[in-house]
Image 1 (tube, rainbow, N blue to C red):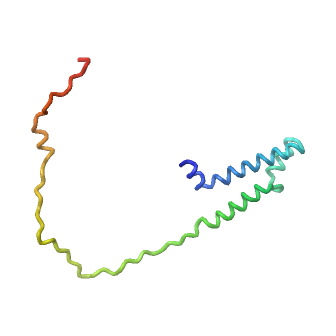
Image 2: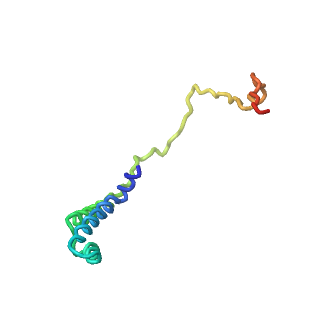
Image 3: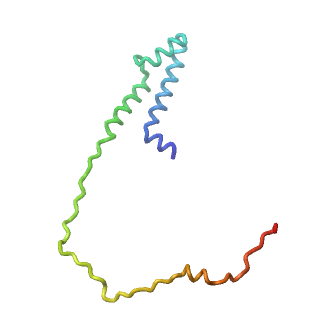
Length: 117
């Protein structure tokens, strides 16, 4: 369920981008110092193919987000002279006060006693 929520929030792009940056940093460390590798990885001028794919995916997903249109609900016209009639064979059922009746009766079995009394 957590993965579904994270996917709905777009966290899969963040995970993919983090993987791309990690791979780029590892590749750039092989050709230069740590400072140069970090600068080359995060400056945005040297994106790898995974970075380009993540950017394209984010862009296409943002276009699709709010394309739903609100539709107006339409109901058929109701009759103006609407009359409700009770059925001819209706009987009223008397209400039973079962709670009050249960208070007047004694319990059938004595309650259990505690062990440590």
